[in-house]
Amino acid sequence: MFLNFKIQGNGEPLLLIHGLFGSLDNLGGLARVLAEQYKVYQIDLPNHGLSPRSLNVDYVSQAAAVMAFLDQQDLTCVSVVGHSMGGKVAMMLATQYPDRIKQLVVMDIAPVSYQVRRHDNVFAGLNASKQLPLRSRKEAEAKLAEHIVDPGVRQFLLKSLARQEDGTFDWRFNVDTLEANYEDITGWTKLDQFGGSTLFLKGSESDYISAEHRGEIEAQFPNAKAHVVANTGHWLHAEKPETVARVITRFLTKSVR
Image 1 (cartoon, one colour):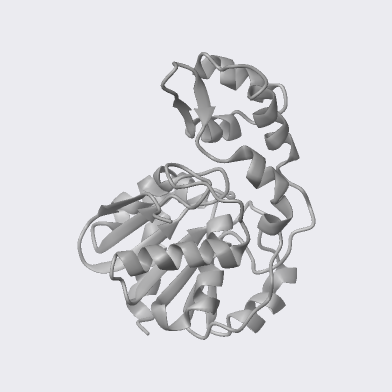
Image 2 (image 1 turned 180 degrees about the vertical axis):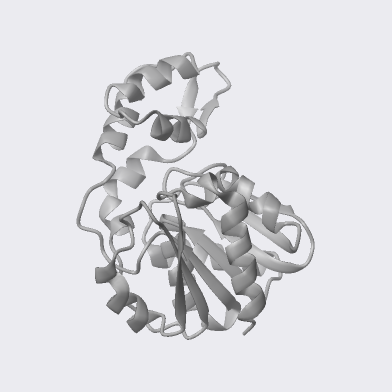
């Protein structure tokens, strides 16, 4: 499998991994700031963006696909930043291939299984949009709005809507596979510790990381530090890209492995 990617900047390699329903462009604002000091690699995960589709979305499989990308790019050791689902991919990558990961930054996700189904309304909207050929972005948003109240979420999803050769629109992420394997995405298999330098970034208004997760974070990532980004939610990197980039850069600079 060959993942779609984008490279910008010069310096030490830094890999950015997006979250569920996203693409490499979703971390574009953060990447542009970080590229001032690093050679930034942005990837589309399997079943997202322009990368190939796969029947497997478990984190071992996703981490293996990312490692294959690193091999293809001759990156023997790299620092990794992952957001949400991408943060779980990054954590799995670090525990599975610790000698290949220099430093790890996890944005607004914990190494735990989440019991709450947060995306049922999103899948309902996406499935509704697939019931008829979409002729415009406006038509797609109208279908999404029947199930998704938050306009910000709708606009986020619409970034992955693409015009097809016949003039209709379709989603770049694999809706059917992601929904059928949703428990693999919300779940987590506890594996070996990663002893490398790790930073967990939390949006102050987000509940994806809470005090009850501290024990699991410390058990699996004993050298982890935490930082709360004020006045941000789950998409902290989009809300305050320069602040988040500054925190990440300071961490990477001070915790060279």
